[in-house]
Length: 234
Ligand SMILES: *Cc1c(COP(=O)(O)O)cnc(C)c1O
Image (cartoon, rainbow, N blue to C red):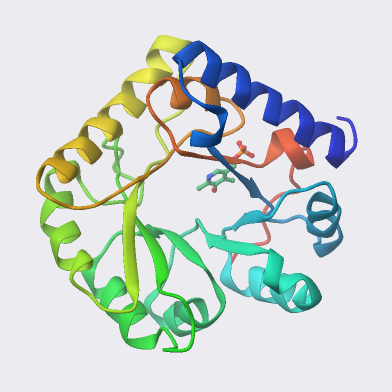
């Protein structure tokens, strides 16, 4: 691995090439740098190299980094991409800009009630268990429309779209299939009148396939920061 700055340049190049292949503009895909298990210093380094949006999985770990980087807060966007328990919603509502991992109406209702009125609306994606894995978080595809309509009506939140972590698949075509299914679900919600613009899908190993299927936000960790130490847990 190179420096964070050179990795960032390389990942941006991968996104640009995937966009060119798909006939999409590079500006249509946002890069979310997944900084879970990485120290605040790594986030600071990526920020200095021009990266502003960061994804975290564990609320307590994220909170420590958000505090350590309070001097940069105005130019950082914090996205929660990991599982969210009911007892952590207040902290999340008070400190994050986005949550990608909402998979129950109850969680969205708590975030709505707890989002401080002085902050911009919390930006939300619904997580979908797109590969139908028994062990995975996320709404079943058939549940998404009902929950989306209810979440879209809540104050102090803005429902932006859908997020998925597909089962790892080898080969471009296999990777595309799950991403395609998530894109179809988003299109169906839009056809029902929901103003959604975000498809959060694609990681270090499959961002090209995700961009080919319409991803508007790719979540990249390892390709930017290198291999992670084993997670310490939430
Ligand atoms: C860790 C993680 C990523 C980044 O994965 P890499 O393979 O390191 O790019 C993306 N999305 C979610 C939800 C994650 O937990």
